[in-house]
Image (cartoon, rainbow, N blue to C red):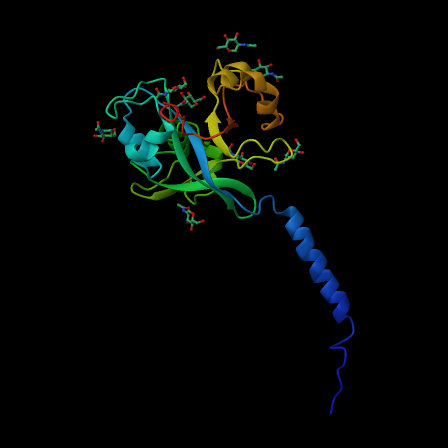
Length: 223
Ligand SMILES: *[C@@H]1O[C@H](CO)[C@@H](O)[C@H](O)[C@H]1NC(C)=O
Ligand SMILES: *[C@@H]1O[C@H](CO)[C@@H](O)[C@H](O)[C@H]1NC(C)=O
Ligand SMILES: *[C@@H]1O[C@H](CO)[C@@H](O)[C@H](O)[C@H]1NC(C)=O
Ligand SMILES: *[C@@H]1O[C@H](CO)[C@@H](O)[C@H](O)[C@H]1NC(C)=O
Ligand SMILES: *[C@@H]1O[C@H](CO)[C@@H](O)[C@H](O)[C@H]1NC(C)=O
Ligand SMILES: *[C@@H]1O[C@H](CO)[C@@H](O)[C@H](O)[C@H]1NC(C)=O
Ligand SMILES: *[C@@H]1O[C@H](CO)[C@@H](O)[C@H](O)[C@H]1NC(C)=O
Ligand SMILES: *[C@@H]1O[C@H](CO)[C@@H](O)[C@H](O)[C@H]1NC(C)=O
């Protein structure tokens, strides 16, 4: 009968190595979980309608209406306003928080056009090029494109008070105080900046993450 023997010399060392490797891998992965819900701020340009906008995100007017208390007529959305859309915020490849939408390309589409025009700068051409195999100028008509939009689930070392975040593309003319005011965070500009370390709110481009208590504004609740 063979007694219990060490499998082979160096086995323990190998185990140790594996353990360390998985530990390092964990340290390297930047997210472990996402969260159920994130909002996106869609800047409306002339000629767009609500069914088109919501459709890009797989939603309908009825879905988004609780997050857009100031839209009273679904057939009328003002150019220059912003529509709140929502989506699950996923941890993608253990690397970053985002959500991937599918977009069916039309003739002449480029990543630039998809990012800036159709998805209203919620993403960028460079970020789209990372998740699609076509070259930007050779996207076949009817091809399904991955449109990845970044999101946030907050940061416990900044604050525990916020559980829902909105991905907000900055526009020229905006700044930290104007964005804070729009979200009734005027007394909390520092917090807004802390959630977006190093971001220049006056840059006129790029996305920021805005903490919101709950997208649904409770206007009727108090009556
Ligand atoms: C909304 O816009 C899309 C795309 O431009 C168009 O196909 C559709 O007919 C429009 N819908 C309404 C209700 O205007
Ligand atoms: C709703 O109100 C907010 C805050 O005033 C504004 O930023 C947004 O553009 C408005 N959205 C619509 C669709 O009117
Ligand atoms: C997106 O950004 C580009 C470049 O800054 C700008 O020209 C365009 O109007 C923006 N689109 C929207 C919908 O805000
Ligand atoms: C999304 O997040 C990743 C990781 O932080 C970053 O590299 C990328 O530039 C972001 N994309 C956009 C469109 O902001
Ligand atoms: C979209 O992403 C999926 C999953 O990562 C991938 O299989 C597919 O090839 C991508 N689509 C394009 C057009 O590259
Ligand atoms: C959370 O905030 C802390 C302190 O500001 C910062 O050091 C850390 O990088 C942030 N974490 C994430 C995932 O953004
Ligand atoms: C921020 O933008 C608002 C609105 O565009 C403007 O009135 C204000 O002067 C700006 N503030 C700063 C500090 O630039
Ligand atoms: C932020 O961006 C604006 C516009 O590009 C620029 O004028 C300003 O100097 C920048 N601020 C900082 C602190 O980099």
